[in-house]
Length: 318
Image (tube, rainbow, N blue to C red):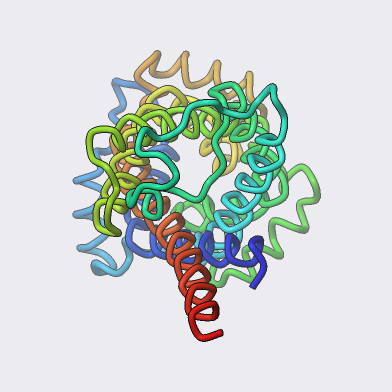
C-alpha cells in the first residue's frame, strides 16, 4: 500500500472510531445551538435537560441520532484531512522556509525514535498554514454533508431518511449546499492551524519528559498532546461554531448570512449566545482529538515498523 493509501486508511479508522464513540456530544451540541430566543425566554435548555427529554421520549439510542450522517461526513473528511495534511506538510518540509530545525532530543538512532512520530516537522508558521489550508479545503468540498449532519441531528426537520434529507438539500441549490461555509471557514482555519501548532509543540515537549520508548508511551504522548491542543483551539474558535450551526439549521431571515446571524445572536443574548454548547464541543473535541490522533499516528507507526521488520527479515534471510 502506498503512503497516501496508508494515511487515508489510518484517517478513516480515526474518523470512524471518534464518531461512533462521541456522537452524543455532537447531537446535544446541535440541539443546544439550534435554539432561538432571549435570556428571559429561557429558550436555551441545558444539555442535561435535553438528554433527559430525549431518553424519555425516544430512548437512549436517540442520542446517537445522526451517526450515519456524521460518518458520511467524518470518515472521508478525517481521512482526506489527515492524509492531505501529511502530504502538504511533507511538501512544505522540503522548503527551508518551513522545515523545522528542532528535533527530538532522543535523536533518530535512539530506541524512542521508532515510537515517536512518522509525521514531518515544520516551523510553527508552517504548521499554522498547513493546518488552515487543508481544513478549509476539505471543509469546502464536504460542506453539503456538514449541512446534512447538522439538520439530521436537529429536531427541526422531518427527515425520514438520509437520502431524502440529502435530496431536499440538493434541490435547494448551491445556496443550501454551501450554507454556513463562511462561518465554518472562519472557525476551521484558525482551529486547524492552531491545533497543529499546539499539537506538535506539546508533543515535542511531552516527548522530552515522557520519551516514547514503547507503543503504550507513544499513544499516551499523542493522546495528551492532541487533547491539549484540541482544548485550546476549541475555546478560541467556538463562537463561529455557534454561528455556523444556526445558519445551517434555522430558516428565519434573521439567520441568513454571517453578519445577520452574528447580530441576531448578540441582540438576543449578548456574549453568552456565542458560548452555547461550548462545554459539549470542548468535551467532544478533546476526546476526539485524543482518540483520532492516537489512532492515526499509531496505525502509521505500526505500518512503518512492519515494513522495517520485513526489510530486516529479508536481509537476514538473504
